[in-house]
Image (cartoon, rainbow, N blue to C red; front, side, top):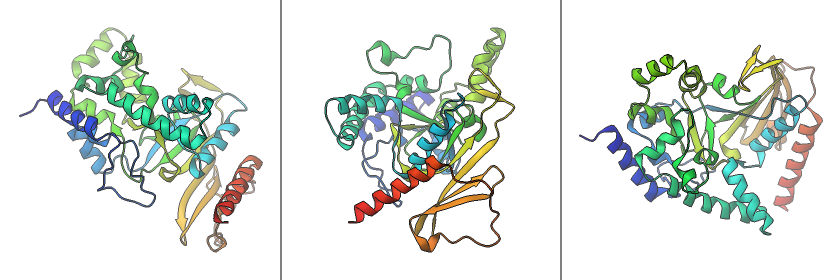
Length: 327
């Protein structure tokens, strides 16, 4: 019988062979055949958790907590639902490099995506390399960095099915429902590698290292990472939180921030619809390009609030771009 590390090593070999290879058994509207996928790298426990629906709905927190910047990040999140690819920091750096060289945005994105796939192949060659994504330790230093390869964490978008965890990473929380799984269940992989041992926990207690305990069991709970980027087809909503007077360690907001607005994207009468609601779940606006899907039931609770001007302007620009494509 294979040991846990051997089993993970076998899975990683599959990754090296299949990165960028379509997983044809997963099909859905908007299926992206050439998307970067690391799904084959999941361990047995991780695969079981994914199959059982643990990550069917996930949350990703982002954005600045500085006063006056939530509006800007809310607008960015709104574009992520419509027409903007949510890129990892590593991918953005590569895209910007190629744009500076004169490539058009689409060309720069395609070239950067191929380069990043090669970077991931370089980083993830051994079973031990996966631990660099889920391990928490002081002075953590990636082998890849020492070898001159960019920090692996910069090439992933970190998510969790626990909204409380996602909210720790920013006031804007994207709701993610993958059209096909492409990412890694880090906690599942860590369990099979026997990372969460009693000995580790007791050592951190003995060292009074409560930061690592908090990271292991709170901040990184049920962590799922998606390689490189998330397209609008995989983002089904947005939760916008208000500022909090006190934020500890740039993570824990006190008191818990109130919800300012919620965006829900879904299909209605064959068309895409985005409902914008206030913090009391009352409808502010229904956005859709199809008049047949825009009707609102008489018993739907309505909000006295108005749609922010910057969101209305972005929506108008999006509708205009759709009409231009049809011509």
